[in-house]
Length: 401
Image (tube, rainbow, N blue to C red):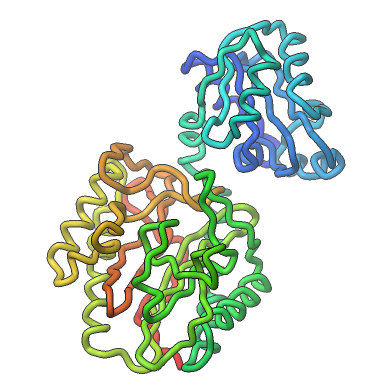
């Protein structure tokens, strides 16, 4: 798909979905959603009528000069750009199009209640319905150009990995190592903003760097290796803890390249690994390989999790698969793309079949109290006959210090 047709083709596909779903129009406001259809993340609302003969309108709140420059690359027509500071302009445009009422789709998972109420007041003749599933479903299958951006994003992890090998040693703090990682990633091209789909979720721009006892202290912000942060204000990410000989280390970062993500994690040890550390890591790799062997079109998200859980059950570390006790996560990964965490989550009761073009972060881990954690993660593309890793990063239990 050429740049001059990308935006209009995506919008035409959404219009067909809107008509099939009983929507008369859509109003998109989430930055990632607007970017997908227009190529800009400047503050704006995108109105898309369901009828193919009616033109969309991108209501720009400010920085119109930036917007007009941004949209050129995606092929979004400049004539579709309009000034709009409020939902009144949206209501007026709908009336101009001859749409006095009907069903308006919005991404309710990203729309604050106050704005939802404001939209309802501005459009009293309209029923508001959630269309997040339609938009995310369209975004779920990546175009070749998107895959290439994600491949570049995955490749950025190498810069952070090399920074760890150079900086991690006994006596240095997690925070100091994470700053070295961050500098290396930024210089390599990492755009530090890490948007999450969930409204209250966030990650440090450096990703998660955790060591020693920080590895088995699981913050409530995720059922995974989280780190503990430096205060209760941000209880996730690197802490002031200083590395010690024998520590296990996990580094997990979603790297952002031109708005698209790769998600990668590796495990390290300060000094030569013990036999038990090596056994735990090898068991984690075994689960990872079993999961990848089953990753192909047609298997469901739940089915892939079942494969991973069965492989973990064959190891001595089954009680610690994806956490422990009431902090054990029931998932083996998630999709990623314009947002770090996209559907489907690879977990029980998610029956979404995997399709070619989906991009999935596969991340088995064992988190063991009093011992540490081991983690392997890469981003994979589902292909017509199997899967393809988006970056060939060496995967071992790396020795540092």
